[in-house]
View (cartoon, rainbow, N blue to C red):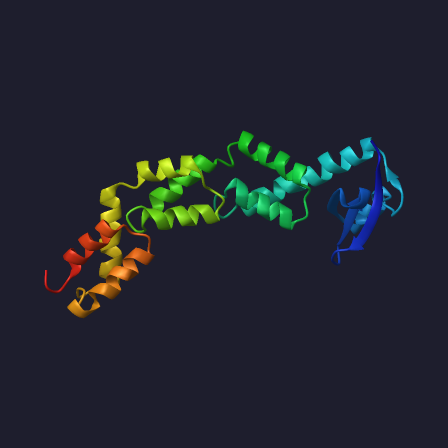
Length: 205
């Protein structure tokens, strides 16, 4: 089905923001591309021509942008979607780009979560790690189960004691115990872990 070009706006020095069917589809094209493709407001784009723009230009560009975004470190599906959305890539193109990335092994949320948890285990509380994963778009029962599996009670106790020791390298003074206890609870540690760490790091133990 043909689409109508209902908007062409200057996005920056090099690109135009193109709107089709009154906002049904929005994307960016370089101005040279717009001119070469004959993109003019009010005109129709035949389905075949639109699919050419979608698959040969926008999708390939989305894949390259995602790969560049992942150049310095692995990313979650959610982070990639957010980055592509910021680049005004249509949702269906972002989805296809992610499918392509997953098919080549570039994106794997389970592997990412395992590596992330392993890197923080013993240095952060289970709840704090879960909160960090949540911000990266990783959540749900699978993540909770992975945390239980990868972060043992021993890891939790060790992390709690390590954090308290860094804050009070010479031990927790008697007058600071309640304050130190609150500090550990805010860090996401359990009451048991906090009490254990205080016993280990107190002046008067």
